[in-house]
Length: 439
Image 1 (tube, one colour):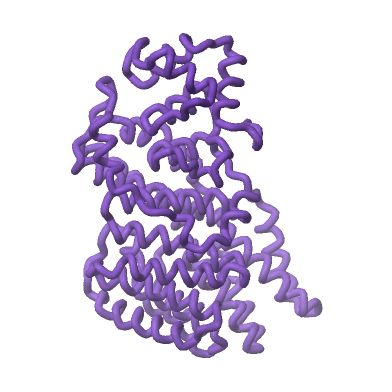
Image 2 (spheres, helix red, strand yellow):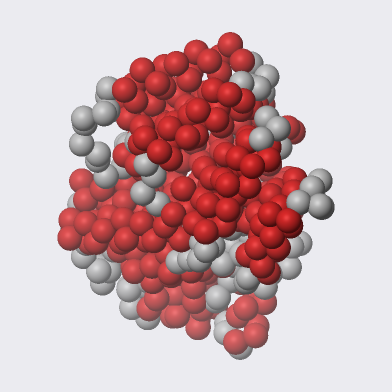
């Protein structure tokens, strides 16, 4: 645990004092950790680290954090420390395992500017400075990351973000970490960064689905930077979408920020030709605009999204995050957008279309739609329809570890409290209470 007022030099001195290390011992241990041998770091360099006359560069920083078992220093805003390159920073984030919610709230109002500009030379610099003893990485390792993201993503889509989040973080730090710090060509490095961006985004999504908002934000930012450094606009746009959705969920004070992020998301994906991708990001912009009160922009973006999703009816799905955006999921998104603008009849029709006509193959997705559908029925005065939808919601939600599902269960109980004399309403409320009592 670090002291929030400590500088990096303070932390290094404290950790060395606890171990009884001087400059020589520190230099030796860091040289060995970096694969350069006992003489890999000079005593003079180590002395400057201890005195604060010098900060560890991008190569040495992850080794300093790991050898001394330090968390990322808090002298920079958030866990994304300015003096860490993206690779060192995301590995430090994964190893620290925790982010202060106050950091998220303090930084979340800063618009899109906190994202910074991806380092165009990041991959090249890592290729040129790789340690001689580092593991050699090829496309096989990149493919392994892609397969693992698919497996972890499938599990989370079915059973919620809390199901395997710890496994995803361990995979990032224990398996992907040594590859990121290894030796590879520039071409492989860009593929490696892109694959790691997808993994970081998945962990961000898992974190958000468990209401770990600060961690989610930092993983999304890392995913954006890695994608930018890999030269992958679609993956970068996906990270921006994650940040936009997160801002929407926070509430009205973040709606302007959500709209700015959604607009940047659409702009970033302009050069991507896949209509499914365009539909995905335009629907996000439509939702953000609806929440922010710009119904004209919301309808324009929703129409554009619908036009593009119709072109994907017979198109094969790809492997990107946006490839899961089927017509059924578009119907769900469309229903939620229309509901936000007060068109409850059209919203209900779209949610029923998502379930009955297009189908949703994941338990978590179906439960989400059913929870929203129940609320829509009740808002239109149809208690029987609400009870029927919510009964299916509770059946589907069993075993799903998701904060969104818990939110729907809470919402169900609050709304049904208005009907204390209805036996079916009381029975459903009791079922929801048992669901919420589960760990």
